[in-house]
Image (tube, rainbow, N blue to C red; front, top):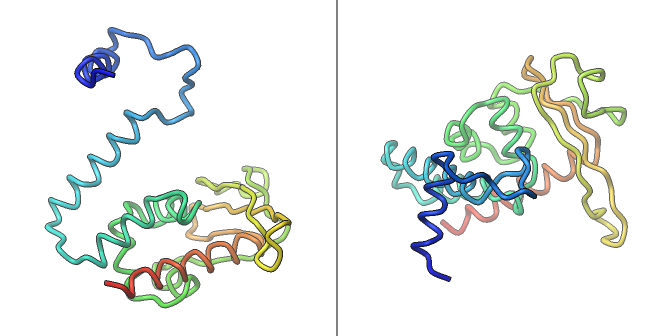
Length: 176
């Protein structure tokens, strides 16, 4: 495939001269949107003149949905940009300590629902399946809600998921 042709098509699409493919919906991030976000994040990191490899590794880890699904949502909706959260990550050993240091409260509630009826102050949240930590053949449903009053509501499966993923992040940072 000729890359120059693809670049021209992308520029035309961004300018509105070529409509997006019929199967593309507005809720699905396009490759261009993902690349633009990565480009913007690199620019922000360059402006910050961050040379600390731990800082950069933490940002990359959080931005990678496959590493820790949902953590980026919690950070962006409660703290702000990912780079604002990294100092809390670097200075906190556990997920609960990270939340406390960032001025956030966690409420474990098995009845949590990802909707505004459960939490009128809801900013965002999510739900997704994860394999059960002691039996990878079974799945639990992770449900969490980020509220505008600096409270994160989540069920036990979500807390286990975030705590475990945060531990993996901290383990990754030990190599730097």
